[in-house]
Length: 151
Image (cartoon, rainbow, N blue to C red):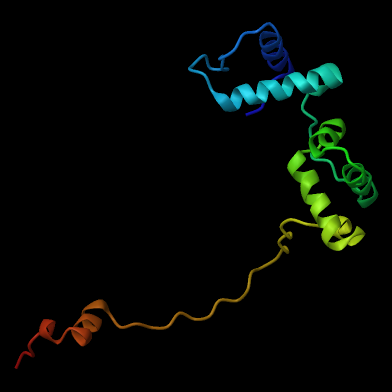
């Protein structure tokens, strides 16, 4: 669920004033929402109001940019601090570090994710095998259910 920057600011101010246990819908306390508010507070402290705004579209990181972030982590900075500084998800940064350790610069250069589907018609489907009508198939497998022949 996306929240407006104004709502996020309101939650951050409540958090900084010591109010705890609030939720957007006014129901009982929610730990995941409280965690999100703490994250908003950190972003607000570091970036100001820009830290509360949604970035819009996903960013495509070049391999050199990824390497810059990975090198900070490998030089001793924590993943969470580098991720917060660059506004990238810590899990994504962890995957980049892991890819760099396993495959080097090639690991950062590879496109990952689901491949796009090729436009156009799908593969030709094989003809479905013909099965006789249900009563005939049942009588074949269960002889006791066969109809007697009329004479």
